[in-house]
Length: 306
Ligand code: NAD
Ligand code: KPL
Image 1: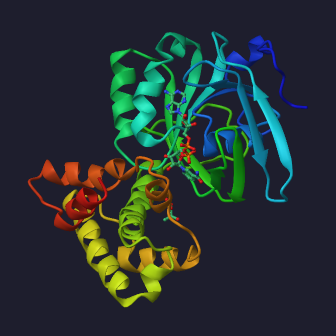
Image 2: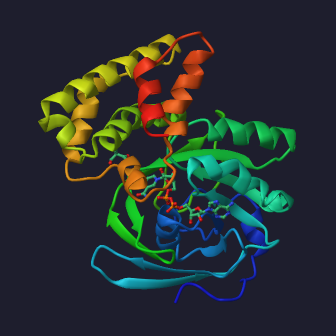
Image 3: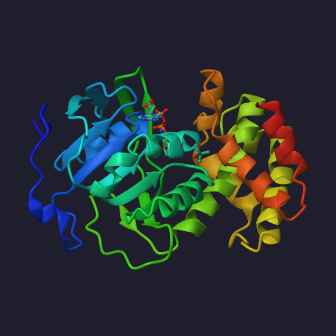
């Protein structure tokens, strides 16, 4: 049983830079024990783990793996222990508030990783950390893993994928990296590429209440996809951050490859939860606005889904 119910002692050695190897035991606190947070806790079950919930309640979760086996996870609450990684897996909009809720403990943190979709929250956090003169390294990551919450405590591992992380500001990483994460030196470009695809597929599937594949097979939806992808592609060019692929083709390919999926935005809408579109299309609208550029299709979709 890899988890203990009382906080384990952190060996002093974990505070000094360790060689970059998957085998090194890390101390990791997870802030946001929803679908992805619980899945990562399970991947990292051999490390020293802590959880953080809104009400400081015990972090008791069950992960149902792809063989339908249920794994019970109990993470002690992170208090003032020194940790190698603070990993934030809240929705994008909750990021800064969640981090601020542990502001007093940040001197104990070596690395902060934001593992989320969307953009805007990373720079908000980076600016706030600078104001606080916090010395922790800020990392950002994106994942193609799939998990969903069956209820507050049960998470289902729906599909395995890759998780890439990189330092938010270009520096040389010196940290030891937990298993399952691949370090890249172009994380901002990768996040932008994912955001571009999400900006096309997610609002359209939510507005049309359709599965991803229907954006390809249904003529009217495919036309809407082409028009939105063109607007998003041009937006990135105007921002002088051109995508290095054709967004219409890539969006059609991703929609086809994930044909049976309900996008995360459609799931949020169907469950009457707030969507992350303000950190996807909303982010693009705000960036474009700074250059006096309008994104009418993005704006209309956002208004329809608000
Ligand atoms: P989720 O809603 O299941 O989990 C978020 C968790 O954060 C919830 O348990 C919530 O209670 C908690 N939280 C919010 N504010 C908090 C606070 N202040 N303190 C402590 N806990 C707090 O969401 P999710 O599906 O896990 O998604 C998280 C992020 O990961 C999103 O950006 C999403 O787009 C991204 N993502 C999810 C998946 C997936 O398959 N679920 C895949 C890739 C990326
Ligand atoms: O990331 C996704 C999401 O649903 O948020 C896609 C790629 C659209 C797959 O469903």
